[in-house]
Amino acid sequence: TVHRISPKRPRLKSNRNVVLLQHGLLDSSHTWINNLVNQSLGFILSDMGYDVWLGNSRGSTYSQYHKTLDASSEEFWQFSWDDMAQKDLPATVEFLLNQTGKKKLFYIGHSQGTEIAFAKLNSDPVFRSKVAAMVALAPVVYLANVKSPLRLMSAVCKKMKFVNTLFGILPGGLLSLFPIVRFFSLLICHERSFPFLCSWILSVFVGFDPDNTNMTRLPVSFAHSPASTSVRNMVHYCQSMSHGKFQAFDFGKEGNMFHYYQPVPPVYGLGNIDIPLKLYWGGDDTLSTPSDVRSLIDELPKRSYIRNMYLPYYNHLEFVWGLDAAEFIYPDILDFLREFQ
Image (tube, rainbow, N blue to C red; front, side):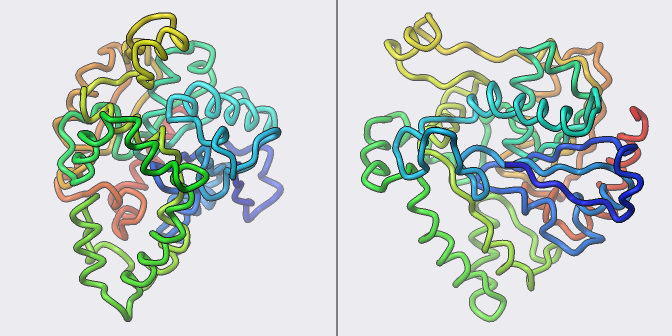
């Protein structure tokens, strides 16, 4: 599912450059319009004349429809970010270009939204030719140095059968857990309930700065987040934290032979990505840590047009929820995109 922001001036519709915004893990398209109009990247880009489309990853709140499968079936949830990269993302880009008549688009991703793009950009030259430039917010490729307690999941996820047993008792992968999680999120993070506890929980897991967040809008935020995903996708992240590699899903030796015709999953490289890139990363990010982002930058080809902005005080969520992002980051993104129009 993709959402489109209608332009304020319809007559400019056909002349606008296309921008696809892709959210991160356990999130949805709402993250790009979460703040007020003058603080949300989606609205800012639209007001500046861009044709803005908001993507939704498979299995998230607004992307649970399928031609032949039902979201209540186990088969629907047999996917990870690898499937999003190789199947969903190119299909979305092709749809947008067909709808708009453009040959290329700009791509802006956050967290998982950067990961699926890096995987596809490196492996598919045809897909690369359709992306004019990419902006990566809190880029995720390597997860060897994750500081969040989520890293503890990597030890559990080594036992894939245990994870499937644990979550498999609830139909639809992780989907069935999220109404419960969302209920407690709304209860704790309501401005009149336990804002300090809410801030602490967010700070521990993803980093959080209440002074740079519109706390009065947290109930709105948590009406949309956390969004759902599959058990397999979470296991894939566990694998990445465990082995520190940027690779396809590991089905085990026999499963890998069936899916990849080799005993180990293929590793994604980054050496073929030659489109213009701008990376934004934060020093307080416990998921996309500075050391892992540096590893990503080191792997990108030196011939590419690559720029990056390091914000020492920024955490994982501030790139999309931070109040001062509209002052310190989004104008820089606009300048970067203008270079390649």
